[in-house]
Image (cartoon, rainbow, N blue to C red; front, top):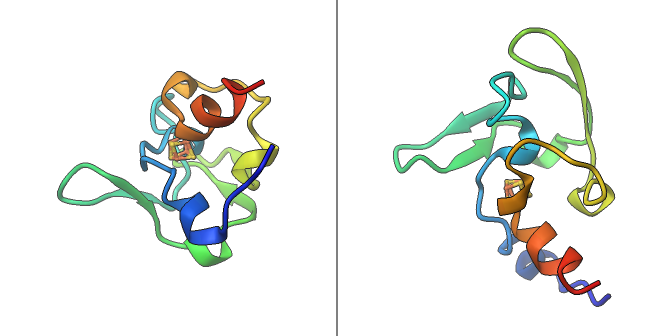
Length: 88
Ligand code: SF4
């Protein structure tokens, strides 16, 4: 599986926020929406590691490619799952 350069790889993301828990009602505390409804992370450059959700649950942020085999609510729209898992 060929993974593109960093910016090209990051541009694959559609910023749905699903991997950060937006569809399960208890997202990461650092997840926000902009005026167009697109999600973003307030600590993006330092995102990996332990964080809290809005209710205080501990969650681990990991590189998306390390998370592709996991299931989460709304994961069927994740652009990385669609691109890389559909190739397998
Ligand atoms: S679920 Fe996939 S497409 Fe959506 S924000 Fe996370 S990495 Fe990006």
